[in-house]
Length: 158
Image (cartoon, rainbow, N blue to C red; front, side):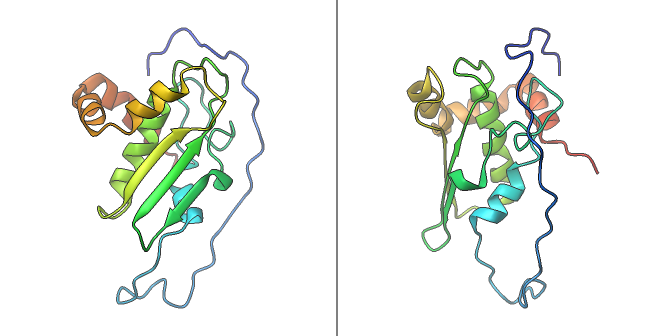
């Protein structure tokens, strides 16, 4: 990434919890249809790297398990995230990274809504509109530079 001017030079960094998810009786059986829940969605997005800092969305409290709702039966996921500052210029890129991770990870049947949490960003309505506009998302992903930045944010340590 080549982001030279940081908007938030000293973000708050939070401790992350070490977590392992216990396998249920049907988890390893391909014949059992496992419902997707908020915990699973959180596990998919928590380690996305912030575009501005060498930190994850979990470490910055941008993503939180409490702000994810999943209705597996209705094939719907709603994620609300919190930018580190109210004028964060990376907010749309962060939302795009969340969307791409879920596009690549969840079954196609899911409709995903990604939103900035109410009252946490000065351009909240405009950002939410951009993040949930299929044409805008598709156009953003056709930009090779932007896609490279998204892929770098999605790269996780082995």
